[in-house]
Each structure stands twice: as C-alpha cells, then as structure tokens.
Amino acid sequence: MRIAGLSRRAAASRDNHSVERLREAVYGTIILLSVLAVLDEKEPSALDAGLSVAGTAVVLFLAHVYAGSVAARIALGRETSRAAWRGLTAESWPVVTVTLWPLVLIALSALGVMSTAVAVSLSTWLAVAALGFWGWLAGVIG
Image (cartoon, rainbow, N blue to C red; front, top):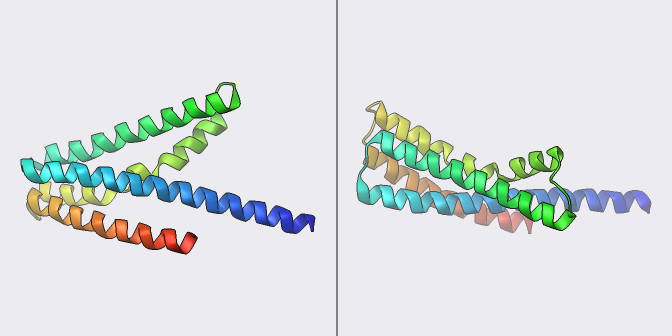
C-alpha cells in the first residue's frame, strides 16, 4: 500500500513537471508567433530578425526565472535555494528552446539559402504546427 502511494506521487510529480514544461513551450511559441508577425511586417535583415527572436527569448526566459524565484520566496518565506534556481531554470527552458528552429532558418537566410522573408514565413507555419502538437500532447497528458 505504501509503495503504491509513493508510485502515484512520483507519477503525479512527473505529470506536473511535464505540464509545466508544456505550459512554457506553449507560452514561448505564442510569444514567438507575435515576434514573427512583427518581423513579417518589417522585412528585416537576417541579423535583425535573429537578434529580435533570440533577444525576446532570453528576456522572456530571465523574466520567468526571476518571477518564479519571487513567487517561491513568498511561498516559502525564505531565499530561493540553488536547487530551486536550477529547477526554475529547467522549468522555464522551453521558452527558449522553441526559438531554436526559427533561429536555424534565419541563419540559413543569412547564408543566402533563402530570403529572410521566407525564413520568417516558414518559422511562422512551424510555430502554428507546434501549437497543434502542444494541443495534441496536452490531450495525451490529460
């Protein structure tokens, strides 16, 4: 009986971790789509597009980690431990990882493989497809 209870708690913890990472990936993808929409209107250089996508991802990531540490400090009533910082960092990392493939496409446009406009359009459609995948994954987890 005791082992079954531990097993259920461990499974719930894994599911909660998966849900948190999924939440961050969805949030990051939506923010990415908003950046790509602006880039589509501006028709920037590959460098400007890459800096916009990467800069937004880094700032959003840092904001999530900081906000999580403030919330943890309030909830626990003490300073955030190193382990908690590592957990917050790992939990928020999907916000950054969703920008990797758009950055690859933008880098290819900088190398002349495609135009920046095509890279931004492809990135937009891939982000829309990713949202569909995240929705499917949420259904599987739920």
